[in-house]
Each structure stands twice: as structure tokens, then as C-alpha cells.
Image 1 (cartoon, rainbow, N blue to C red):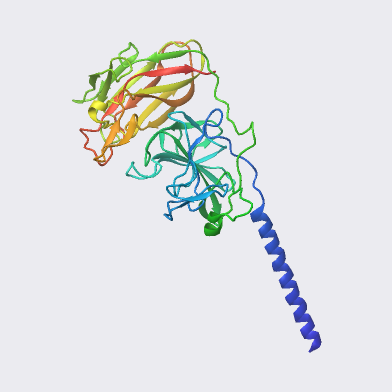
Image 2: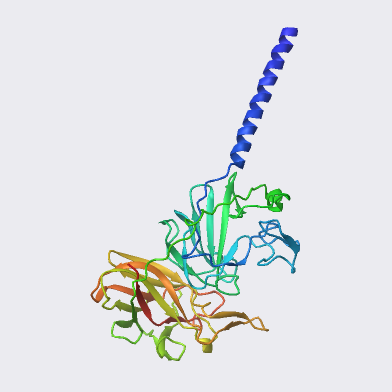
Length: 397
């Protein structure tokens, strides 16, 4: 009997030791510092924040408390500098500037957060980096790539003020996959060595610092080639075409790039009935150019413009579709009756990305926009407008 008891105790001890080993391995893995991999999601030096990550708590759980990654905590509205209760990311102060992937990866999502385009992140992109982390780029005015595309650290869109936003900026967020569930985490980590992280206590997710060290964190802007070629909507290389009874209208206003622009109601379906074409004019030389389009505010029409104009860019060796929200350009907020207000002469150049072009003028290299834009369900087909104005080619390489 004693031998049997000793044998059972040995087996029990072995089980306890094995469980302890597994717990030690699991704990060591869970607490291991992940490799730093994030660069800034825009070109150039630090732009500053307009909002921080709320550790108490993100995802808009109202508790009248805001806590930064430093442990600094206070009640709302007397919260620390740059805070918004429940905010689950960082708002970078870049207005209608190129947004750059923080790390290589595959685009997990590209498009609108909800059918109601006034909600959440609006036009946004999510990138899966293959290391249990995803990054989010919200409130964009334009998206350069489609779901499923692989990207490196290059421009993926342009910042803006779509969705639930009061002004142009970039919302940058990070998700971590914990046991099959994606949870928001703070890429600046938790730096308070005295007090525990309230977000970790609630969510059981540890916020690790993920930013690359300088200078690797700063993404260098593309070279400035020193020349810009603009093609307006009343130039020799611009044309409009319509099938059937539809036609383009011309609006004369100082809000345009050069005295006038063209507009029409989008068709609201997948059939192209009308399109506008800017054939590429002669450029200074062959090389890479950033393509930019000008979107007028047209405040006299109360800013009702299409939310998903699809611009097609045909360049040397390829063709790309870029989705642009025109409706929020020049948006300044809501008036006392909760109606949107827009700045007069608040038109904006919006980047469609960089492409290679030949030098000579060409009918096979062009920028085109068609009438198959998305129609907001809250607007009538006859009141939602698609605007076309100027295009410019800015030399980079």
C-alpha cells in the first residue's frame, strides 16, 4: 500500500511540476516584449495629437474618467491635455495629407465603416501585419487600395474628416489578436510604474510599446521633383461624355480652381452612363508623379456632394481605382439646427497616390471619374452631386 501511495504522490508531483512549467512558459510568452514594428502613419516628423488613447476605458464606455498611457488620470471634462473619453486610438493632426502604412501587411478592410457614412471611422483602412497586430486608419478622404491588397510602407490613402468627425485628421488605432478576439491596445504601452493599467485589468490585454526607435519611426516623404502640371476642366485635354439624355452641367464660381467646374447627379448603379476624362498633358520628363484632384466646396449648394467618387488612374503599365469622399471637403461642423456647415472657398487638393507616367501627352494615360458613385441613402438621386474640376501631376521621382 505504501508503495502505491508513493507512486501516486510521484505522479501528482510530476503533474504539478508540468503544469507549473506550462504556466511559466505561457506567462513568459504573454509578457514578452513584441518586436517594435510601427513607423508613423504619415510622412515627415511628429505632427502632434488632437486626442490620446483612453485607458479608462476605450470603446466609448462612459465612466466620466480619462486615463493616459502615463497613468495621468482625471474626470471629464477636466481631463489631461489632448483627451476624449472612451477614445480607442490616437488622432494625428494631418489635414488632407498622404496616409502611409505603418508597417508592411495585407489590407484586411478598405471602405466605409457602416452603410450610414456619418458613423464611426467613415472611410477607413485596416491592415493585418501577420504578427497578431492590425492597424486602423480612419476618417480618410480617399482610399488607394482595395481589400486583399498587400502593401509596404507607402501611401494607402489621404486623411480627411469622414464618418463621426468634426474636422480633418487621421485616427490611428491598433488591434491585438488575443485568443481569436481582436482587442484595441495602446501602441505607446503603459508607462506608469506605480499604478496598474485599468484597460489591462478590464480587458486582460497588455499594452506594449510598438513604435520603432528614431530615426526609423519617421517615414521620409517622397522627393520633390520641383514641377507641377495642372489640367483644368476647361483645358484642351479635358472631355466629358454621356450616353443617352444625361449630360454634364457647368457651374461658374470662384470656389472652383479656375472660374468653373462640371457636375452631375451620379447614376446610383453600376452602369457607366457619363464620365469625365483628363488626358495626361505633356510632362517635364518620364518618371513618378503624385496625382492630385481638386474638389470644390460649392457651399452655395449646401455641400451635398457624392461620398464615393471613383477616380480611375491609368498610368504606364497599370490602372487603379481610388475612392474619394467629396461630401466632407470644407466641412466645418454643425450649426444650431444640426445641419452641416461648409467653408466658402474651402476646396481641397486630394492626393490619389504616386504613379509612373511617360513624358509626352497621351490618350492612354489619364484620370477619369464616372457617374457610378455611391449614393447616400439619405439623399435623393437628384440632389446628390458629383463634382469634377482640376487634376495636377506633381513630380516626385
